[in-house]
Length: 350
Image (tube, rainbow, N blue to C red; front, side, top):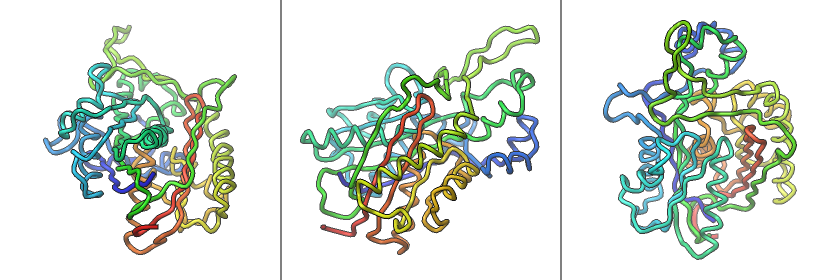
C-alpha cells in the first residue's frame, strides 16, 4: 500500500491557553506547564461560512485537500473510510454524507468508531480492501471535541485535575489517499499492525456522544446543565502510554531492521506536548527526528496521525529526509489499543 496524497484541516482561529483559562477558571501558566499545549482549534456554529462547523464539514475539507494533493479525481476512488469518535449523527452515517458532498457514489463506504488509534485502524482496513483487488481509496480521520465540553454549571463543580483534560483536545481532520500500486511517489507501507491489549484492564477513557448538537440540557438544583461527556483516568494514561509507545517502536524496528536513532521521521503519540516530549526523551529520539503537532493543534483524536503524516511530507518536500524512513506509534487508552506503522518515502518507481 502506498500513500499518495495528504491533508490536514483545522477550523477557525487558534484558541490559546489564556482563552482556555478564562473559560475554565484555570491559570494560563499552569496550563502551559501541565499540558505543553499552546493552542488548539474548535468548530463553532457561528463561525464564517467557509469554516468547518462539524465532523462532516472537517471530513469533506480533508478529503478535498488530500485528493488535490494526490492529483487524482474523486471518480477514481474505489472506497471511502472515515474514522471518528464524534459522528454528526447515528444515522445517516457521516461517511455517507461526506461521500455525497464530495461526489462519490457506487463504492463501499466504511465508518469506524475509534479514538486515537482510529487513523491506523482506517489504514489497516484500507490495506485489506486493496489486497482484495480494489485499486485506490481515501481514508479520513476527523473529530469534533468541543461538544464533549461541560456546561458552565458543571465546570464550577469540577476539580482542576478534571478540567485540565479539556485543555488537551481540539477539533480537526486529516486524510490520506491510498493506492495498491507500490510504484510511484509517496509513502510506501513497510509494516503495519493493530491490536487490542486491554483484556482484564479498566478503560482509561469513557466518552458519551450526543451528536453535533452536543449533550442535552438536564434540570439541576441550580438550573439547567449539560450531561458530562465522560471520564478519563489521566494518571493511568500518563503511566502506561509511554510504556506502550516504547513497545510499539521496538516491534517496528525489529520488523524493519531499522535503528530508531537513524530513522529520519519519528511520529510519536500526541496526547499533549508534555507527554510527547517525555516519550521522545525516554526513547532517545532527537528533536529533529520528531514530527509533532499536538502543542499547536491539540489532541485531534482520529485526525492526529494524518496531520503528522502531512507535516512529515512537508518536511520531505522541503528537502529534509527525502527517500527516508518514517515510524508511527499510536496508543488509544480507551481500552488500550496499540498500533504501529513503518513507511519509506519514494520519489518515483522503486
